[in-house]
Length: 388
Ligand SMILES: *Cc1c(COP(=O)(O)O)cnc(C)c1O
Image (tube, rainbow, N blue to C red):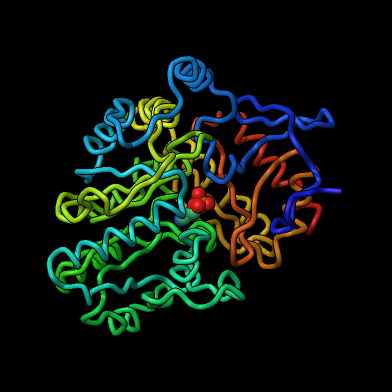
């Protein structure tokens, strides 16, 4: 029997080790891992540079309190700010902590300028921002909040794509709009660039903040360092996590000078957040994934993968409804429930994961090889032909 709580419906498989895009099961089978720990293992498994970083740093220093200077964190924060819209960074340990801290920053900003009643956050219904009490209510999902009352208040919701209801939901109490630039769990739904620009314009007009949750779609996953970059929009606050640690738990909130001014000593903290071990790994990931060459390669892999998936969509139009996504955050939306499809892919040694709206979510490591994409395409083709 298992002594782990039953809050996950786990597949009956475990892995002994991983290398690059592959995982090796305890039963000795080799799997192509296109889950990447849900957009976490951005450089695949046991990347030599990350192994070296963690080995070197672990001999020196793992953890000190944030009561002291942490040079590795200073370095990573500087890199993130030089590369993006941000002026300041606050390190956490996970995505939910980062989004929750983003909410705190937004509220605290309005408090600091004497407008404490501006404290409500406007989010997309059935989005995903994490599993803490506040973030489940931010997500506005019935399934995630059921049984966890009393409700955490301060969140309003609009339907994805419903621009009229969205505008009506902004009140004098609205502090910020928080959306995922690309909805991950929600079914790989991309917010179009024109729409991001419109959101920014509305936020400017109403003098409210724009929070773009890039926990899943950020750190090179979209082919740009941040998924919003192509739109030229500058958000105020951006929570990140998943990909930045390459498998080591790291979260962070990136913010501009204006809102960061509210985060004075004592307003927020984290015991583990930004410790030297985590920060060393983050620095190595950042050095690799933030280069133009690396990101161009993600774009190239994406183009190849997406165009071939679209060919499969034409070939199996009765099975595949739509190919979604950007970069290497890809969704195959099926006409029917995806459970059997994912199982069949796994039987053929290709690991994928579900998302809402019958979507098979595909998240290869960002340094995936063309021949690995070819293997995946072949497996997907085969499974479609068998289901037909
Ligand atoms: C995964 C995710 C989170 C939560 O991250 P955790 O590390 O699981 O807490 C928040 N926002 C988005 C968009 C995510 O995909």
